[in-house]
Image (tube, rainbow, N blue to C red; front, top):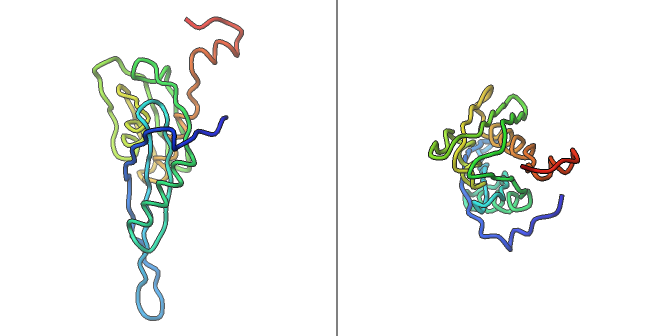
Length: 162
């Protein structure tokens, strides 16, 4: 796959989850933060990143940088995905199904953030297994990575796209 230039796109970022982590040391507790951020241009490009730091803004900044490095393209057809797909990451399993126009995004939490960032406007989703935001976001991205455009699939099979 080609590397996508994040600077050429108008990316919007969305904070999915912010976690405070405590490390117990001799003097007490030392807090740090984890941030999961999804970035996308609403036209098919989407990526997610995890940032860790001692301050919240720094963790978010690191997560955005990481997300920009992990951008990939999702083929969106008429505001939805071309076919059903399931993404699995760890104990997280996300099922995505195409929907007719006017349905909207039927999703919650991390799945909704990823779907909105990618520019898909009509889709039915179901998150199975864990509700851990890390695994749910990565499972959703895995599902979207599996989607191939109808044109590329037809080309692989030596046929003509309809």
